Amino acid sequence: MVLSGAGMSAESGISTFRDAGGLWEGHDVMTVASPEGWRKNSELVLEFYNQRRRQLLAVQPNAGHRALAALEKDFEVIIVTQNVDDLHERAGSSQVIHLHGELLKVRSTSFPELIYDWREDLKTGGCCERGTQLRPHIVWFGEMVPMLETAAEIVCEADFLFIVGTSLQVYPAAGLVHYARAGIPVFYIDPKAFSYPSVSNLKLIAKPATTGVPEAISEISRLVI
Image (cartoon, rainbow, N blue to C red; front, side, top):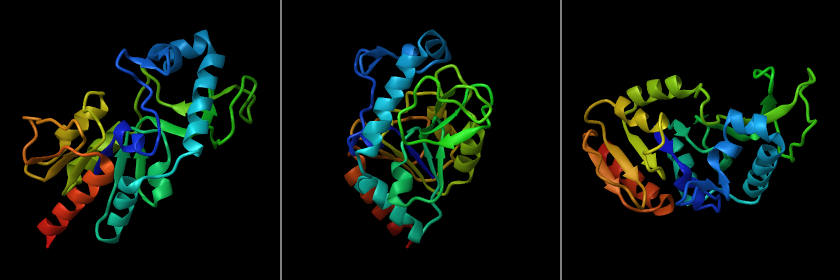
């Protein structure tokens, strides 16, 4: 099982949005990624995600994404990502769970089960088939993370766990590592990877995904052989 975060996509040119001051592209996070921000200024929120969508469509998966996709030749690989992009899928990964939603989808504000693939800009007045405004299919701060329980079940069954490009500071996703069975190899791949005392058999690879993921794959291949 792979838990991937913003650093995984940053190497493809996707902005991680949040700077050292906690701002997302110059906006306070609550103005563009919360139900309150949506109610206050939906046009600002829509344009923020329009810009993110345009950026996503202009970039490509990197070597880290491709290495994980190729790993499916020898292992069952399930990716649980905090990212809202589709770079894992474009690289060829067949089992991807998005904890925080998907940028290339939108949904009805009144009928959340109405979800649509979406690659264009979304404007005020863009409505679902039942006539209500569409919004980004993103899990905003303060909203439930619907796939979290499924992700926890997957971690419980994993024989190997990769943690790639995440600070392990954003909850509830960061808590998933604690569901890993005691003793399984856990590879933490990130330039700022740090020791996590509560996780046994943790292997730190202080490298970006493009070089760190292939290194971890070589390690598990040796362990299996």
